[in-house]
Picture 1 (tube, rainbow, N blue to C red):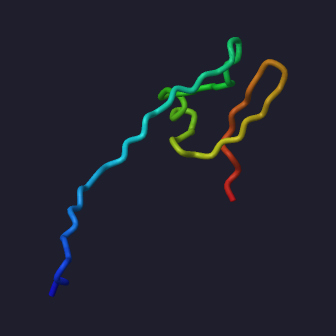
Picture 2 (picture 1 turned 120 degrees about the horizontal axis):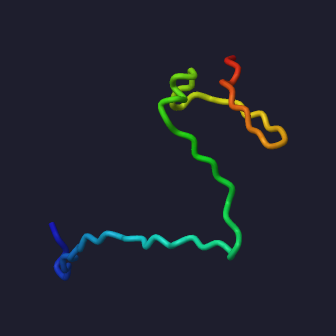
Length: 69
């Protein structure tokens, strides 16, 4: 049973929102990025999510399937 001088509380549900912020880079700077996609990767035996190894040399990148184990 409620107390004599008890007043019920009113609860209001609220939701929080967050504002996404843009990321800015200094002028003249762009992070290194290389996107490789296409069906030809599958034809070479590479599948989505598969681990790979990259060998670098002067003016070249060599992509290999990572050794299992």
